[in-house]
Structure formats: C-alpha cells, structure tokens
Length: 119
Image 1 (cartoon, rainbow, N blue to C red):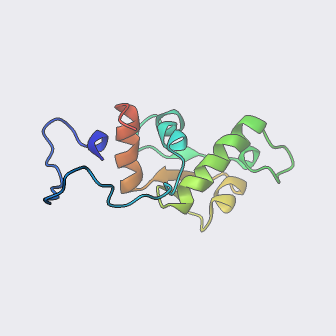
Image 2: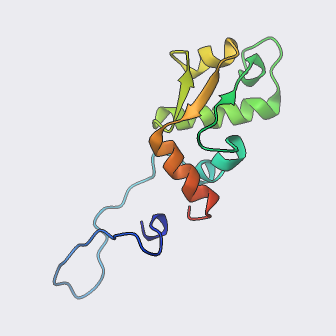
C-alpha cells in the first residue's frame, strides 16, 4: 500500500497497542502485478483507446501470437474492471469487430502507478 501513495499523500491509519506488526489480511492479488506493470506498454497514455483487430483473438482466421499474448492480458484486466471494451459488450467482440478498449478510472490509477514504477 505504501508504494501506491506519493510523498505527500494522506496515509490510512490503524492504531493499536501491539508488540509487533501484524498482517491484517493475507490474500492473493486479483491480477498478477507483472500484468499491471505492462499497462504503460499497452496504453501510451491512460486516456487513449487501444485499437483492436481480429489478429488479437486466437480463434480468428489469422491470429498474431504477439497480439494474442497482449489480448490475454487485456482480458484478465477486463475481468477485474481495469479495462473495458469500447462499443462492444465483450472484449472478444471488440477484437473481432475491430473496435477498441480503454482503461477505466481504476485502470488509469494503476497505469500511473506502473508508469512511476510503484508497482
């Protein structure tokens, strides 16, 4: 959590009388941090859409292995509501119909953290 906050940002505060630091909660992250670190590679700016085409989908007639790998990450990001398809209901439809995808507000937040090497 500390890395997500800037030098002057307000910190959440937990007061307690304990003799050592205790973890309040241990859990697996909803998405692999390595995927979050690649957000600036996929989106040059957080407000720009990423154009998709059928080559991103592995079931298309001419898939591009590099684009398929990127699309799998985009689908994982979509499942945790960091990326949404533009003018399509699902990421598959956006790719097959040459639409685009964009970062949500939370996705822009994580994009900024990744850009600043805080993830």
